[in-house]
Length: 136
Image (cartoon, rainbow, N blue to C red; front, side, top):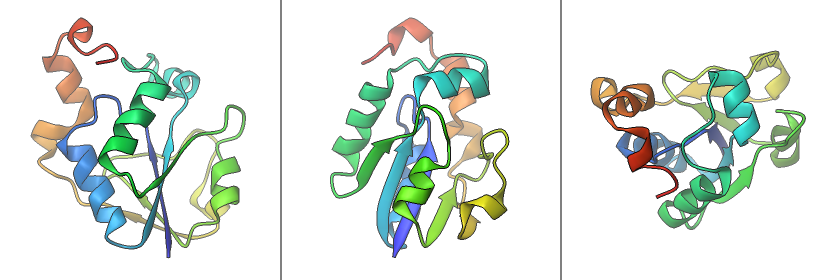
């Protein structure tokens, strides 16, 4: 069964790992890494780490997963290419602007949170100076 996940994965942390391990337990894991330009468009700020760095961190953590960059123009290109059986989203993740669940073509489920008061990316980012993590 093909399991599709996606995200920014800036500063890969235990919350990300729990999300991806939960998805991996359901089948063959496919991870789409958000493009730097899309992160800035959606979140209002560029990620601290480049898309290449974030992909490399994921490849090290999940060597058996298929890890791809999102399409630079159309969020749904990787979904159509992979044709997943299931999409697993993070507990607090939203679909990109203009994309609805109906367009995804498969069931969507939510992963359980792992200590969201500790491992939520936005909270972790507030606690750590930006310069200390840039592409490390």
